[in-house]
Image (cartoon, rainbow, N blue to C red; front, side, top):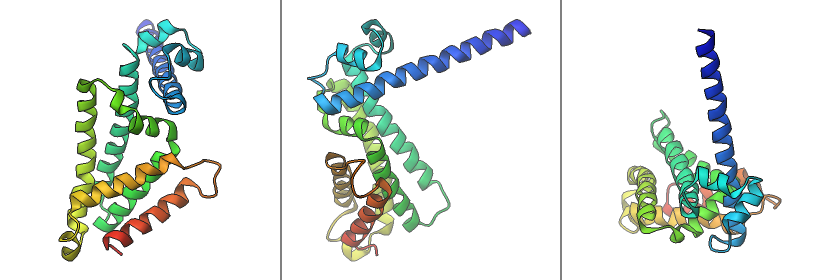
Length: 206
């Protein structure tokens, strides 16, 4: 029994170490892709930043494209999971929408490198991997679109459909990553509040 427990502990420790090292590589790659671009970043650059040898990079990721895919998928999955939790909550639709918008803004601005990389460099993905990301992103966008269909006043919905409104909203939010500075005048939370007010005023939800 003691031997089995010891083996399980070793296995668990190795798993944590594996996950931590893998996430370290993802974080370093995201920052480099943001700073130098996907094409301008070599595997050697990533290994230097992550303080691992190149063999370790290929141990965790088949190639640089898979690494970019993992960055993009992590962002998309985490946003989708957050959104689904909000939708499944007992909050009224208006509060769900508010929380959805603010959470997305804060997430984008507090995960700046990887979010920017996922947005700007995904065109560098092979078509097969890109299609997976697009399908997952559509799942996320549909959550917001369905909520907008319940909230948009009829007269507004005749002018701007929930689909178009959601495209405008996502475009606005993700454009924030292009100019936001963590040392700037406003915090991510303050910007999230201002963006939410701007959006509900624009689509007539106030």
